[in-house]
Length: 305
Ligand code: SF4
Ligand code: SF4
Image (cartoon, rainbow, N blue to C red):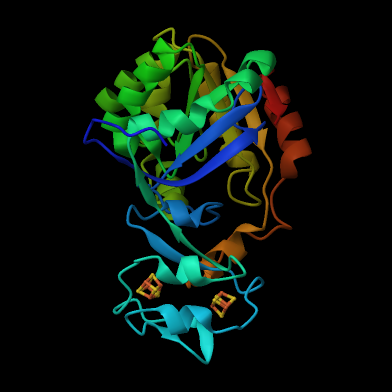
């Protein structure tokens, strides 16, 4: 990595190269850690807290005991390496280095804009041929708006297309400032009813809708994305409210429906956390019927991802 002279750092929990689901073309997705929401179905629970976290993948562990032997704090149970005393662990990372099976990780590293740019620039040839670029996701990238603004300007100066994947749960002033620097905003729309949004995500639906309204009137490029969560976002009531909201915008935006994956449960156990109850996969309309419902309600721009 190139050394940065600046002191600003972002907390990142993943870099994903060759992504084709986070905006147009082939992209590098940078996942920033920390999120104001805690959705019942969160696919990236390691992105919720802004602090670094220990990750243990039991399916990879071969039970060699190296991690417990090398830990200077005696934080790992030598008889059961899945048990770690977080009061003793200072996340030094020695056990990660000492694990021969790559069964341990620390989710959350600090990186300067220059260090992130070094990683992003490695794949410039792919961006050029595919119409891709870099996407900043999370967590909620707008929680680290100062970093985001700096790196969006750097990308713009180097001709790299940028997208920001956001929950839109952010102060209006921050949301609009970032939207003016990004080439494309990927905006989540989950639930329109305030009570349901608060219950299922901890977020403020009115804040989200206000930001989307402002964006729609600003001329900035954006795509709305709705995760199809069984029985939660794909109910007829929510879809009807989404359709009514979109029909009230000055221009009908593109709406992508994102399929639900149940693999998120395993991610909670890797963090040593109990998974939330989550959705019932047998409920709701499902993505095909949700698409039909939205189109019949007048949202002709709705499509699957
Ligand atoms: S991160 Fe460091 S202190 Fe924590 S368990 Fe691993 S070796 Fe021990
Ligand atoms: S070093 Fe890795 S493989 Fe060995 S017990 Fe620890 S976590 Fe498991």
